[in-house]
Length: 427
Image (tube, rainbow, N blue to C red; front, side):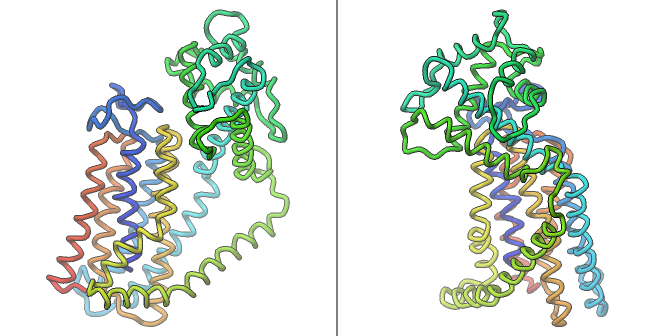
């Protein structure tokens, strides 16, 4: 239970705040951010992050997911002497139903998957454009030390600008994209143009001016640098490697189906494989649970540190480290699209903690007829999820100062648990 509470608190405090700091961009007067533009430093009100409206929906789902905790705590809240086992069963049923509802929501409203696919498609289009420019424009887009070659980028702009009016229109972009070969990826050129226009046209005049084009290419060259590992030297093969990687990412998300994901060659086998993997993961968790708890207790006895604080602080840092590093790297790209996906996945992870993980825990408590006595942990989860849920459900822009709200919740959670468990004897 300490690991469950610590994981939820860490995701919504330390990781959430770090993503705001790493992903911050300049805030405009209308409170929206400018992708990849971070000139205001650590201005508390002048810089920050923005997400799309779907991300706020994920935050609302996360806030709803705390209801099973409330149900289990009803006997404690009203000081009832009976009904403890019944409320554990009701909490288990509600948690299981919420897991099912969340899975069905992902199936029938797959906006997270679609957003990932849209981003992968745009990334593949841009990598193809960069690779094509490298092959057919005189000069290299990147010097060996990674410095962008702006004159070559300008030369590419003039090559696409067929009427030489100093701006790129939809027809010119589409004609250029059609001439780029994307191997086995079935690409809709009109959709690709829409995505490039949305990414490059910062003045919103439905054309891409020379400065916007150069800035856009520079941003994507930086994206390529972050995506492809190099030894410090950028060879001519660098952009080809970037294009190959984006094609693989696109195909993995698309799973070699059609663009809308309507056709699945063998749905029965796919379902069987998915269920088998879930059962395998559950079995692995069950097999390693006892050794993990024993290790925590032994370490606690050796160091005289309460086992709860080891599971609340140290264990979440270890178990969520890969997810945290991935989220921070994704947020560092400083784009609304990637930031939206990052925060959505954080909220999704907390939702699964509050539903699936809690359901497994409640099932053990009910089957073994154990005593539910985790009021301090539940209170911390409730407070953090409620505060961050309300804070993120009704806004899409987060100035830099908001990271301090998240950061302060972490030590506050530790203090609450310590006071309630060790001073008031809630444990």
